[in-house]
Length: 114
Image (tube, rainbow, N blue to C red):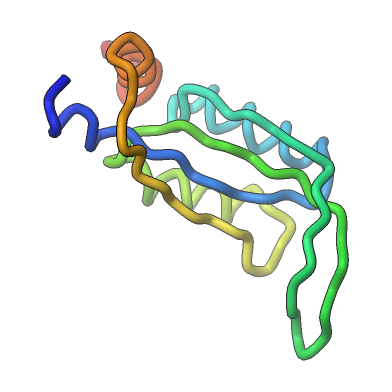
């Protein structure tokens, strides 16, 4: 696997207020070929500061597998579909990706011809 190919893969972390909202976002991202796969974990307990108060809420964490080139579109789509004023969108670059998984991910995202 070349460094260029490995560099093409990204994992985006995002949270949602409910399992249904996470599933809805995940389904749209996969249907629109912006993500190859989305894992939803939770509920998770999130403690954070919002508007001067410490909040303690239940959220669902999405692991979104996509191409690096699609990150800005993934982020924009999450913002459009999300109920939060400022949704969490964090991108991670994997240190390594297995060749078969990478080929599947690249074939599952982008144009329908891929």
